[in-house]
Image 1 (tube, helix red, strand yellow):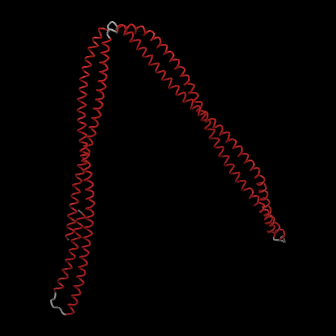
Image 2 (tube, helix red, strand yellow; image 1 turned 90 degrees about the vertical axis):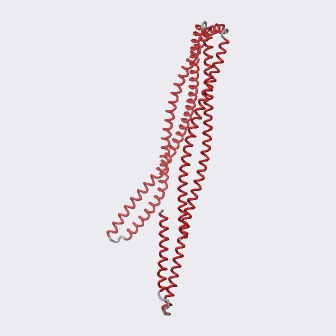
Image 3 (cartoon, helix red, strand yellow; image 1 turned 135 degrees about the vertical axis):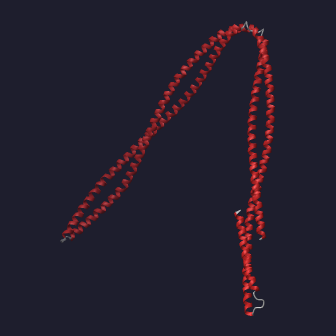
Length: 439
């Protein structure tokens, strides 16, 4: 809106400026129909100048209009590109919406089918349950004679099952303990190797320390006499300079002595410089050796700490190994007791099972039928559970599709609203371009 107002004001100003110049030109041209020659020439020149100015203003206005139209067309091109992209996006969303609606319809059909299958399986299960109850009632009468026997057998079988479960648990516990023991023994072996390596490293570092200390002692022995010599030379130079200063202060006939002292001082300084040159590289070597000694001592300290940590770890592992070996021994003893208990139960159970077998021959057919019905019931229950799981999955998928459909519809609605805004903006730009072209 603000850009359109600026365009209108610009056009009005240009038009007003042109009309004002024309108004100035026409009265001057009509002021005298037959002017004198000198006046006519002046008027003609003035008219030519004003016509030139008018032409320049018209050309400037045309250029401004052309620039304005180009700017508006660029804005329109940008909006048209955005509109085209938005239209494509809306088309893709509508295609996605159609796909989702198809998925929703398929899921609804699938859910209906699963519900029907689930209901049929439940009805069949009810029939099987009823038949099982009938067979169990028929078996009840035949099993009254076996009630006491079965009770005892069941008790023994329960005790046997409990004993077997305990034995399985103990065996599993033993296997885990043995695996843990093997792992601890491997860890202990690795720690032992670390200790050996650390001790070897420590011995090597201590040998290096001795070698460095010997090197330092040798360097100090070499430097010591040189330092003593340097100190003696410095003292001699100081004494000679004091004596020289005293001779110079007397200002007597001491020229020969002064010259001799000066030569002696120069010779002493030369000797001192030579001694300093001998001391300097030795002190550098001594400093490097001391640095190396400090580094070796730090490495020795670190290695000793690592060695102590490894020994502590070894002690901890050995303690755990001893404790675990004790637990394994106890578990093996418990396994032996459980096996003895199982053997006693089985020995008591065997004759009872033989006696029951004779009684069960007359009800074998009913038991077989009951087993078949129970298997059928188990299969139906499993089938019902599978139908229920599939129904839950399909229901969740349908909810997700419904949510995605709602989101897609909202995106399409927002896109259409934005598309309408772009159409209005493009129409407004077309109107402004047309208006700018007419001026």
